[in-house]
Image 1: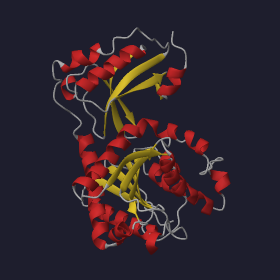
Image 2: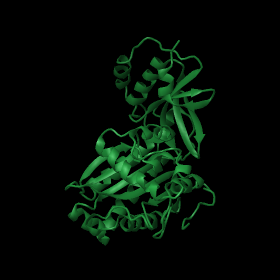
Image 3: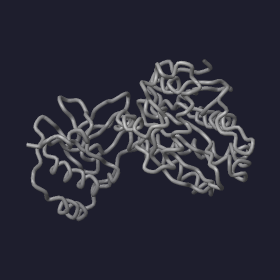
Image 4: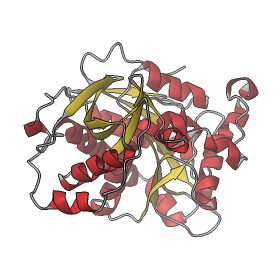
Length: 352
């Protein structure tokens, strides 16, 4: 396998770059352009630029035209204990659709998102022993996608943040059409244990876009936009500290959520307000005045939480308070016996 593994993180920020398809899997061939080649060229350029930063280690799932199984791509990222997994692809459709899309893992919200994921997932059929390794997963079945979301649940917020940076760069810096940040059931994202995105850089089936993506200029520009999005994401983690809250916003937010107590015995709800590669002291002045703050290290990423309560109504008030203090992307998480568990499972059970 033509892949490079990290030799221990040594405190560096590890990015795994995945060029979709390869070898006897060409990807889509819209207008005669080859997805596997375009994706690889973009990934190599992204990596070359990121490697200029001494704080970053870059790992490639492939650097040449070789075939990799989906599970091998995820395994490379997990073995490297990566901070990010970024998979690059090119889209296809039967009409004149064009524009970029960046996906995070989630249940498909419409038929179009399902079809994009289906197309990328069907590469497993090129593997001789796919039935043995994918536990009955069927790319053609919407029901098969339901179980994919749980593993990436705790990384969803960070994945969406990176995806937003990517799409904003495509539109703001390159003036490309963005079709938005979307959710769909990609197997390769499901099996990674870190924030992960899959970038569809454009439609090869739309000839003007295919020509752009097949050109050196297009590949260089797309690579620079992706590279800068990754750096923006890293810098945001490194600098995830802020000013004190703004008086007045808090009371308005809390007033909206004055609900009766809903207590779940044995469950502790917290509000995750930040995740960073840096270890930050749990002091109010580091977190816009919020107190108490707790910290947990998960897979070399430090997660920061506000509050702790078994009352879900109180947890929603804590979330509103964090929102008002500038942490609009915060979310409630649930713990049992010190371990994080899926929030939706808790809420489906009976409160006391």
